[in-house]
Length: 465
Length: 133
Image (cartoon, rainbow over all chains, first blue to last red; front, side, top):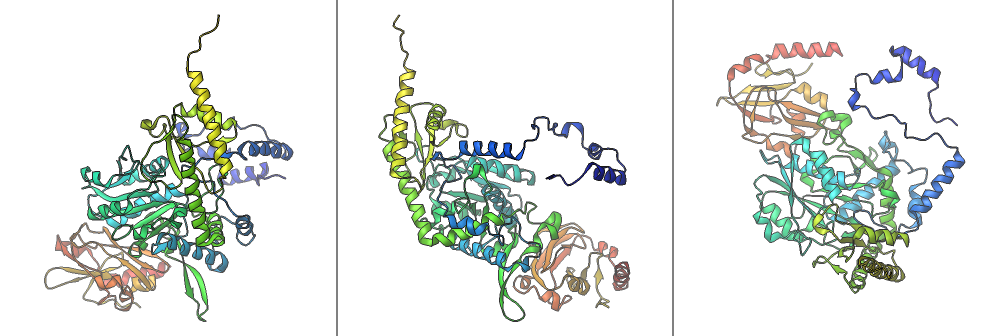
């Protein structure tokens, strides 16, 4: 079955109407240097049978590994019912319907999602989702800039303990809006931002402070002190949180004396499978007074003319299809399908299920760190409490260890030295509630053996002849 | 036809201007503009003290179906804004020339008022717009 809808005849006819010779001519005005290369590297077509076999082989290579890898996306249990419901015909679309109010079921589900996210974060309002965690942070920064409107203040304080990719994405999105990212170093021994040392920073230009909880190293930040410090210095506080952890940790709406002003994060831990990096979804919440500066859409509950309750899209007037260049954001992607799964996931687990998953993940990681610390040469890098990730120093090159572990079908963690040169030899590990005691035992056993082997290989061995 | 008080001046972007005794100018949006927007749900106003050029965007009036910029008809400095609109934006619909005023400006150059329309000119503009539709 042909999936390209235009026949050669169609193309010829259309080109004749617009008066150009070839499709290529349509791109005349794009300078040569900006054109992408040809698609020569794409192989010739395969039959359906061949494609199926290829994809199965690749899926087999990806799947089945024992996952101790975190760093922003986590291998949590997703009950089978979640995607059974989310993939029903009534829900299975990435899009909010164009005649939104005709789809009351979809709107109600988004409304429930927003309610659950505000309950987790203790914030007043949540939108119906954004593209992913990194772009949600960028939108939070842009939103803070609009809210604060402080003449001449155009920097945002971002701890270096924020996910490196998030910082890169935020920088890409905000740098053309005259906003500077000022990085706050983390304390070397603790892996968190030391509130005591913040006063050394020049904050006269800052309109916002980002507070990650937990941070990229899994370490818990002193969120109360940081939030109060931000507010004392006239900065809005943006909480960047893992939503699952909020089943246990203090919600950002209650940080410090006044709570965070804007809260965002990556929603993947709520029902989205890892699937090689996406799709995931971002969430964004704020205090009520800032809602007019929030990008995206919000589903509200209302009554119709006959006083029957129903759901409707509100705050649309600032979206790009109405406000064009002056819209609050021109990246209006929301992740309807992933949010559907998240709402079902949270419903099925309930507050107690989320709490159980969060505390089991913490316990497993604590257990793993404890057992690995008994392996000669391995030691935790940071002294502060952590949630479900931790940084360990290894007595051997991390890349070599990860390779050897992968051979055993174990994804052993994330090497930190590319993003943090000072953490050369350090590994970020995560053990979610899915890991069993046997899994942890297997990890420790392989690690012990591999490190011994690498240490032996590092000793020069004199040939016998 | 829309209500267009003769004592006011008007901009082509549908703001009205009233000269006050103290030399400041009160600014709002016309009866026609509020009727076109429909029920307002939110009004965003500039900070007091902010300097403005003529025709600079300095606020937003937002209804359930549209959000529209408000432009300063003359250059000057904001000396007051109608803070009642934060909780009761519907005042703009109910009384656009009275309680629904938006802001007060201290003009840099009163001569700029001459560039604005008088009520006859504004009525002619509304008629022309109606014909164009």
